[in-house]
Length: 327
Image 1 (spheres, rainbow, N blue to C red):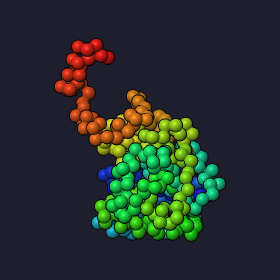
Image 2 (tube, rainbow, N blue to C red):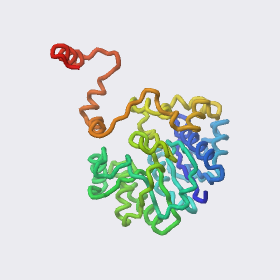
Image 3 (tube, rainbow, N blue to C red):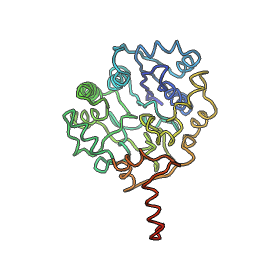
Image 4 (cartoon, rainbow, N blue to C red):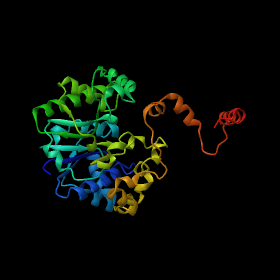
């Protein structure tokens, strides 16, 4: 594999971002033993590795190169992380495949060397933007930063990106970094709206990667069998329901990794077979049901639901069904 694998990490001992990156890098190395794996981090995170004992040492050993970048430590961890991500083309030399830390690598990635494009990424949620479940919210965010994405065919997911050493990639990243900082000032901390804006501003240099390169598990079930990168999306960690979808969304699974710097049998199992990370009790939804579960009506009902807790609405519906013979 000639293309480098690159991660970005901003972390403290109080979060689990380093542990997520640890698991992803272990899986990347296991399936790609000859790959050059690079970590880009800020100085604060880099210095903290020495304070993490066995975990910090084991973590360092996963990478061929660690590049610390001096950033203002008073900035939020999210902003520092996104500043590094949107600056990668000027930080890392050569072609690289950027991968988010909340991922598990499920196979050899060498085929990326043959993909002919200056930049490439997968469609967000594995669909065209026309039918994107978060279309309205995404349009609203983009409009806050002065861009209307309504006519875009794809809204790209920035979790996995192929980046060539090319003038097009350099121009795109310069624009993306500028656009991200502008968006942050306007109250948009996410990097995907500025990615969409920059792609359009630069003449759409981002090509479409096959879905197996960034299988977003909530919407990418049909690609899981052949997935090369399984993206379980740690931003859902606090939402409760998603915590039960994939085991790596639960911070407690990283306990032994934090304390002794090695993967316990449960984490080893997920690295060997990403399917093993799914909850035992899981149900799939598609079509109109998927759109319903994105509505405020559903969120309001879901917020009040607790298994085993009495619900007057449920009781009245049960009485109705009994009286009218409904099932």
